[in-house]
Image (cartoon, rainbow, N blue to C red):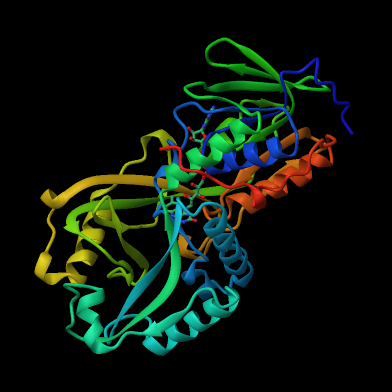
Amino acid sequence: MIAKSKDTVDADILIIGGGIYGCGVAQAISAGGFKTILIEKNSLASGTSSQSTKLIHGGLRYLEQFNLKLVYEALSERECLLKIAPDLVSRQWFYIPVYSTGKRPAWFITCGLFLYYLLSAGRSKFKWLKKNDWSTKVAGLNTKDLKAVLAYEDAATDDAALTRAVAASAKTLGCKIFEQTTVESAKFNGSYWQVKLANGEQLTARVLVNAAGPWVNIVSKVIYPEPPTLNINLVQGTHLLLNRDCTSFIYTESLDGRVMFFRPWRGKTLVGTTEVLFQGDPEQVKPRHSEIDAILNTYNFYFPDSVCLEADILETYCGLRVLPEVEQAAFFASRETVIAFDQTTCPAYFAIYGGKLTTYRKESEKVLKLIKNILPATATKSTKEIHLDSVD
Ligand SMILES: Cc1cc2nc3c(=O)[nH]c(=O)nc-3n(C[C@H](O)[C@H](O)[C@H](O)COP(=O)(O)OP(=O)(O)OC[C@H]3O[C@@H](n4cnc5c(N)ncnc54)[C@H](O)[C@@H]3O)c2cc1C
């Protein structure tokens, strides 16, 4: 165990990245009594954590990959977030229109919903809508070849607001957060890390956590000794905010058979997402024309009386998923978080790869548990008990 001398280092733990994972870890380890510093190069939630579909969900589609463990864990985290962050996470009905031309028949989806219900311990109720209710629950829906509309319960949030609330909680627990500050390099001198910032300042810490999201392997290159890295794919996902009113959450198949959500966002319709392999600098990611077309075509199929053209797009945004490298399509890559560490080649260093917004709290508690093997904790408060207030 590394000797802990609070007098000689600036922090027990320094975290790189102010997305939901960096902030989640900051909160969990600050609650564990550790002196914590978080460094974010832009503003909190400026990366993937403001570019998601903003759902707190088990992920119905992961049942198709038989990833029951991920779905079960995410559903129990959903219940936890509904309890500790009621101002930020809300339970919603989601509607699934099923067409005779679709890839997934109604019986297949119903089996999935039943499994989802079981995995949620009965907290995701589901039903078939009566035909009379189709047009009231999902106004304007294309009814040609429409066989059924199923409904199930899940939850939604504002991802950036949730991240800022978690950061605020970490701050209250004593964490120091520096935004607009880039970590340039970090060197382990045998007993602690010397972390160089782009503004010329230096900080020292016993443990380093790389929570840089899509930048995780870029950051690991400026760390000495260079830690082993995981082979990853960055997969971009685009969303469009359309100038159309929206009151329901809708789970659809895009025209190529993948899952696409329509959801209310600032009174309008947010639609996404796509999955396209990305190569290059994460800073440069932007929606492609093919993605915009795919989203508009999907929307126009479901709402033919309210066709959207490019001129109806109010906003576009694009985020990067960090997925393990697989040969199949990104759809099949695991969404589970990997906490990578190797105490021999790079002691006192942890890197977080991938994961879901929904499971940030549980994964952050796992990082805390690993850190406790290196540094003794002085407190034992669980983030399960800490209420999150909106700070926006
Ligand atoms: C299109 C899309 C849709 C999604 N939808 C959902 C969903 O509906 N529900 C769900 O549960 N999950 C969803 N996810 C997954 C979820 O959004 C991510 O798991 C989560 O936001 C990742 O957070 P993060 O903290 O790891 O990364 P990020 O939010 O990207 O944070 C990393 C941070 O590190 C900072 N950084 C990088 N380098 C440095 C440096 N050198 N110094 C200082 N700071 C640095 C960056 O500026 C960034 O803010 C979605 C993901 C995508 C891409």
